[in-house]
Image 1 (cartoon, rainbow, N blue to C red):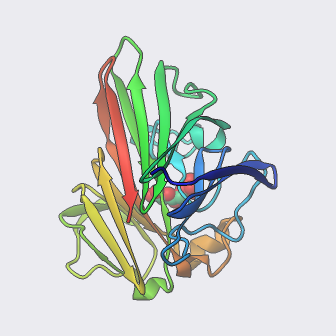
Image 2: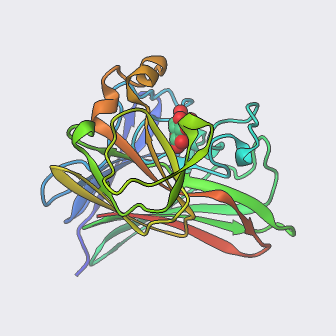
Image 3: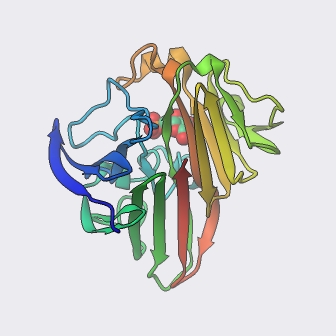
Length: 280
Ligand SMILES: O=P(O)(O)OC[C@H]1O[C@@H](O)[C@H](O)[C@@H](O)[C@@H]1O
């Protein structure tokens, strides 16, 4: 039997939202950014995602929290330090539309696409879709198809912000191998055996872990595929003070574990890549 779903519209500030509720969970998606803001399984009614209390909903500013879509580059454009181009690409600042929604026995699947897939620094012909499955778990797929005649260089990320009770009590498991430390000019380090966050953390883990587990009272599993990196980010107090959409203590209750392509995927003409993250 299909799950009983309701999808309603609401508004926060200037942003139009979709509120999804079915037998398994509730979720909220902002059409600005194609941005998932919350995912609350009905088993415990606890939001797995973290949304900044100071997030800006003016229909122009990228939303701080939830799952921002970084595309078609990650950070500074293609790691070339192009400060003239928007950080993390241009689709998190666009209006997306809901193309379809479908119910099944396992939940509700929604497909969204952005207004435009061309922007500053990126004039290639592509198709971009976001598939979201709201069920016992949340499954997010970012699907890029190269419709251009030439091969394109792609980087992207599902930049998920997770809720934790206390960042200093969090343990991460599943990561291994080397990471590049963005706070130390991309110097490479070995992933520690016991992974705790005690300071500003901005790491690109080059070994694409399939399952990363966040433990801090609540247990969250982050399963990824189609990625070449996992990014772990917490800005800590000093950087929160600098950001207008974070409160001073915001860093204490969040951690970003991002499923990402940061090592530049050569996507050939007519090929498709699916970057996927499942929140368990
Ligand atoms: O402020 P933004 O553009 O949303 O980026 C937030 C963070 O995103 C992380 O993915 C990056 O590794 C950090 O370097 C960056 O600061």
